[in-house]
Amino acid sequence: MALALSGCSRPSAEEMFKKGEEAQKAEQYNDAIVSFQDLIKTYPDSARTPEAYYAIGSIYQNHTKSYPLAIQAFRQLAEKYPNHATASSALFLVGFIYNNELKNIDSARLAYEEFIKRYPNDQLVVSAQFELNNLGKEPAEILKSQTLMTEEPPKSVLKAKKKK
Image (cartoon, rainbow, N blue to C red; front, side, top):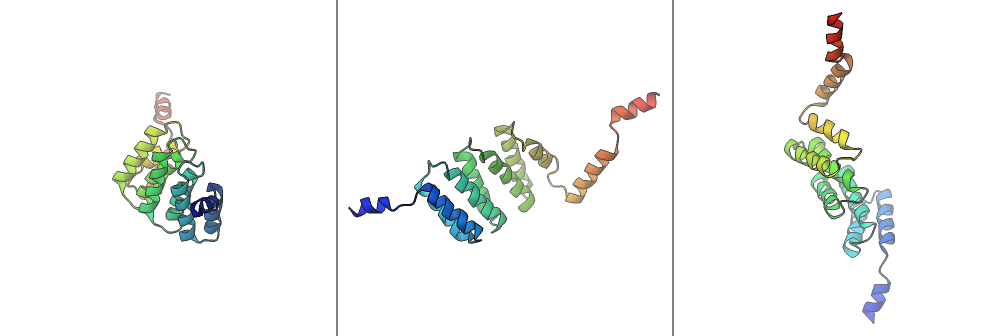
């Protein structure tokens, strides 16, 4: 009887997600993470579960700066729910965190390459390719190379001018 009553009082996945969102908005990040983790454990097949993984990863990345935990949450989302709308962004963010926050170029390269392989038509492929092409470079070096590219005419234009 007690089990039947306790089963009725369990909040829904939607309620748990909203509780996590409210805690996040109130900047109570640990409470938000706990709510999202409870949702994941209780409702692994809910439509809100991949969103809970993404929310956890975002909190760890942007608010607590717990980058390894952010990577873990984003990877779990991409592995368990590869077709979810946020899975490709999560996998891209793994590479981004490795490159820009942890300065781990080898892991960033692997993550970006995995992202491009798994989601070749995603809108972030251009960004992933840009990141791959500039791994290990300082922002000033990237900016300088971008400026040179926009200032220099293509070689085909230079050849055409020489022929005249």
